[in-house]
Image (tube, rainbow, N blue to C red; front, side, top):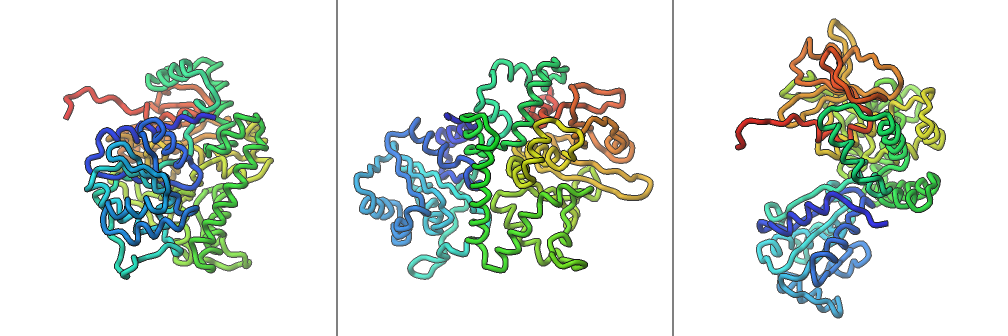
Length: 459
């Protein structure tokens, strides 16, 4: 399956205007980082040098012994028989660079030198790597490439990329996107088809291996097998990059996320992590482990706010943790959850899955989701997500079932300075008499289209 990814255009933009930088792509394992770089190299360079430090640990010495670009190239040439390093026509790809801090430091040399294009990638650049060497041969700390490194974050496939992969009609998709942008109602056939695909997307997720298996076999079970492998790799990473005590705590946090999201308020509660009846867990005991999950790209934090208006002030000990890929969440919840979502079973509590998917859509659009909750008092309300879209503050409510009542989002603007209110639900596009914008659930994947156009002077 040839997979079209949006990040490819960002790689092209970097090549055309590098501004004295190397490129580093970060993101969780198996989101397609290696695939997209290999495809990019094939399309744009005569020579491609690929080094994966997990499979080729001997290559670390080439960087640990080097003092400049010429010495790196010389060391690599010795170890890679037949490799061609032609200035201006060569891309060097340093995969899983977190395994070799000296290679990360060398990005500064390559960026300043400019003869060779260098792309690095890492699955765990945001976490502490206890297995990687911390210093070079002389015992000095590796130099930071700060200022010489253009960092991109790659995530699993978004809903639009999934539609491309399954062969959805591009013309029809563009028409639907145009209606979302213009806030025009969709045809019933458009609603039904897109809602069906969105349910599939929640089950399959956006991990390329899972999508490829589904496209090839049309079987959910085959995509599920790929997700099982990914889950195994996640646990392996947790154990490899943590000491034994923290590995156990981190795994416990990761495996508890579906339970927390399935609770009534979806808040992450430390007490759920203790196996002993009546015991209580402290935030200090587990918060660093949750940050590891976020840093590795496996989870998205969503903090509670003191108020759903700007400037946002988050509450440090009030947060939700969503999984970065909803297909992984559904797989962890079991076959019955997948079947209920596929059948659009209103008897199944799909709130956890749908809310996780909306959080995923927001994150993949570069939006950091937050939420607001007040459990008592005159202005008691719960806003599922509070976001910034350009210069607007938007309150969002998500409805996974058939009920359309929206008491919180309906009154939030009476109390707080909120520019817009949105509901994502099983319904069509419309604006009601109270000014609330209604969208089908899948439209959250295209929330970037909902930015209000500014017709004033350009700055």
